[in-house]
Image (cartoon, rainbow, N blue to C red):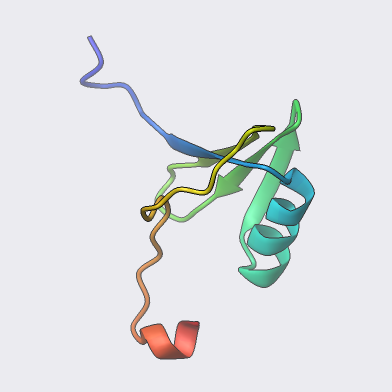
Length: 75
């Protein structure tokens, strides 16, 4: 049933404005916004949904990974 479905991932944040600034301005990702949610347009044709959640608690694990050649230089 889902073997040909193009899945996408998503995560919640407690501040959509801060997320827009971070992902758009700091990381330089292309972002769109609709219905109070952000979509991160990342290379590879798999968008990531960022949705607001009032009782959001930050994950204790990695939810979004970006491959880089030098971690120290990228941070």
